[in-house]
Image (cartoon, rainbow, N blue to C red; front, side, top):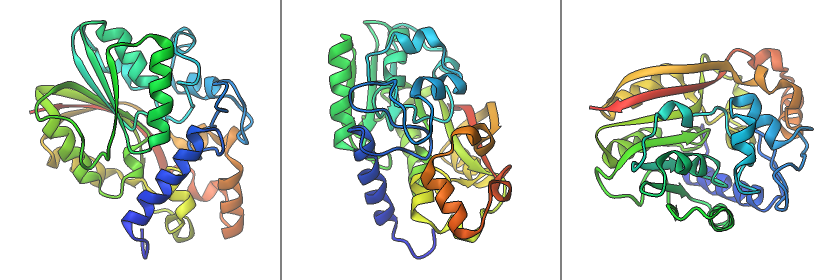
Amino acid sequence: MKNIDPEQLVKEVKRRYAKIAVGQESSCCAPAPSAESAAATSCCRTTAAEVSGGLGYETDELKSLPEGANMGLGCGAPIDHLDLKPGEVVLDLGSGGGIDVFLAAKQVGPDGKVIGVDMTPEMIERARQNAESGGFDQVEFRLGRLEDLPVDDDSVDAVTSNCVINLVPDKQRVFNEIARVLKPGGRLVISDVVLDGPLPESVAGDLLAYVGCVAGAMQRDAYFAAVEAAGLTNVEIFGDVDFLAAVEDHVPDDITDLLESTGIGLNDVRGVVHSVTFRATMS
């Protein structure tokens, strides 16, 4: 983003997601439930379960999670595409309340391990409480940045992330870190937001839109070039949808206000912002 220090962006993302973790604020990606209930509504006028169901999560698997793990913050449903096996080690980047960590844990079983990394202490605390309440002994949540993962080299079989890498200013460093921690032949499945064209300048330069997963998105070609530059190959796309069209019925009030204040309507950005779910492997 022009004229905004990357570390300022990181601080704002951290500040806002800390509030989301304790139910004080909503995300532009999806509603934030209250600290007491994963089914609470937000300014988006829908529930976290409804949002996640619309993204591809099965109702039964959502019901099996600890209360509060599903915060409705994703833009896809990546876990099922990982083809996890019992005993594997999995890493979730930007693990939030732990939804994908817990789903992965069910697949790798008691002999496997799932590590969630998040830079927000409030999210880590919430996820650890969820793990304890759900009896998930094979999961671990670590505080850290995605550009400098607190994970050993060549130590994980699979990596996932859901609508988080778009929030990191230096995405190339994130993919380099993924390549560092993956075992040879390891794989990733990620859901993220990419752009298929330029955003209007008033949106592209807005801090709120960045934290809301829109202005932080990278142009599609540059994004996948960064994936390949890290040594990740065999890219396969499972899902590709117009992100704003998909959430149009429950666009958060703050993004609606942003568009109205700049004189830009949804039609001006529809078709530009896409949610993609893709797989790649470590060469």
